[in-house]
Each structure stands twice: as C-alpha cells, then as structure tokens.
Figure 1 (cartoon, helix red, strand yellow):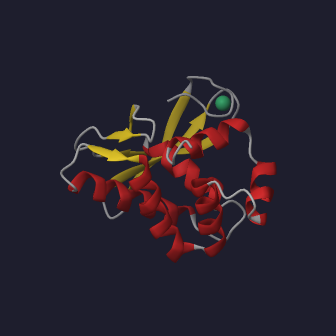
Figure 2: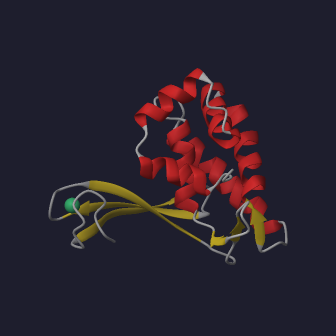
Length: 162
Ligand SMILES: [Zn+2]
C-alpha cells in the first residue's frame, strides 16, 4: 500500500483487527520511509456499483471518494470518524441491497444528506449547499475558502453537475 504522505511503497502492517462488527478489517500501517502512520480497511465487495451522473456519464462507485466528501463537509465538527464510516457503510449496504447495479449521483446525495441530518447540522448544511449549489449559504463560503480544487471535485463527483 502506497504511503499517503510521501508516496513510498515501503509500508508495513503494524496491527490488524476486526472492525464494523466484523464486516471489515482495520489495519494500522507504518511507512518505513517517512515514518507516517495511516489506517486502511479491508471490506467485502459483493459486486461492482456504478454511479450515473446527471450528465449521463457512468463512473465506478468509489467508497473512499464518498467518505472524503462527507469528511470535508464534517471538517472541524465534532463528528467521530467512526460515525462517518458507519454512514458510508450504511449507504453502501443500501446500494448493494437495492438490486440495482447502477445508482444516480442524485440518489447518493440524498442518502448522504439523510444520514448527515442525524449526525451534525452544520455538516448537513455544508453538504446540502454543495449538493444544491446554494452558494449564498455563509457556511458554504467558509467551507469553499478552505477547500482545494481537488477536494471540491471529489464532493462534486458524488453530487450533481449543474
Ligand atoms: Zn511515507
């Protein structure tokens, strides 16, 4: 696994343990180059899921991207990383059990907002702002100033392009 900090491939697993009620394995990893520590999760993937964007383009569902977009919305809020992970797992389970291999980006956005509503009001408003493109919301202006282009692109990838 490539180190997210320095890009080195020389990383080692320090610890592995069950997570998410045994639905996943959490691994603590260590980079031999820069000493960075990071966590990875191993999960069962029942089948490939595809996102249909508003413009009709199909892209493979990317769990990490979805998680990142929620993390950005919840930045500096008192939301446990575990709760975000549970939210993402819940959404993936709903997608997998829907029987449809394809899901619209709009539907994912709705599922995220549904979940965020119960997690954190500000994160919800931020996500909804990006989702609905309500640029006048003051929280969104603040969020926007903190985000890099790349992070915003990852939020957009799981919402709509209008
Ligand atoms: Zn490193």
